[in-house]
Amino acid sequence: MLHYFGYFAAIFIGLSLGIMGGGGSILTVPVLVYLMGVSPVLSTAYSLFVVGSTAAVGASGYFRKGMVSVKTAVVFLLPSLAAVFLVRKVLLPAIPHELFTVGKVVFTKDLLVLVAFAVLMVVAATSMIRSQQAETILDEELHHKHAFNYFLILGIGLVVGLLTGFVGAGGGFLIIPALVLGARLPMKLAVGTSLAIIAFNSLIGFTGDLSAGTPIAWAFLLGFLAFALGGIVLGTYLARFIPGAKLKPAFGWFTLAMGTFILLRELVFIHK
Image 1 (cartoon, one colour):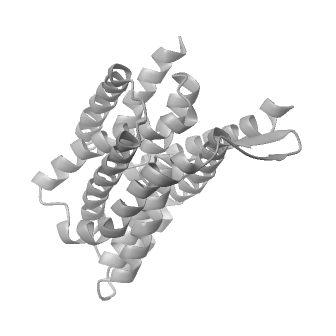
Image 2 (cartoon, helix red, strand yellow):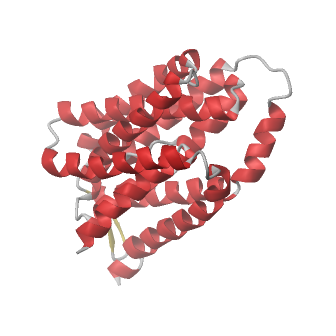
């Protein structure tokens, strides 16, 4: 029964990406773990494929409209691609299954991934809840003349690459502010460029899993992806009528609740 909710959630993930240009990917790992029964570490690999493929479809529409800054994407991706590939290929496989024990809690690799992901969800949720105020500040910043900040773009690229590799999320909540403040991109151009970066980052990270020999259930993965792609196509259409900025705070509160639930479940309730 939970599987049916999982496929419905896949549609919702694509829908939110299509309407808001990001955000939905943060739910992919929890959906795979708690609704589809996939292990946390394997879920991060599946998430990279689903998020990358879905973002690629969304980015292609922006690219056709000339709303992707190729120069900015290349600068951002230079450190980001290297980081995400090395994390998936080298770092994650090298982490032992059991790390340490705190009281009754045994920190395993799976638990570490879930806790890191939940913390990321809380941070992303805070960003989305404050989105209207943040976007106003970003728009005001665009009126001030500043040079293209290579160091900021490269630095955020490295951070996003590490996060994407470790938890399997796109990191759009970090990418868009970096593109607006560091590359001086208008918001709509930043969204299109962000989707392109997320697509490349996630799919390159997934190739790291493939080269590391991670077993992939392709029939299940492609089926889940099909629902997410259906969602982003519908979301892209609905974006003409529904302003994404108005949905972000509500989606942020939902994401905050999910992140808090994961932390409580994994660190408190499940170990009582």
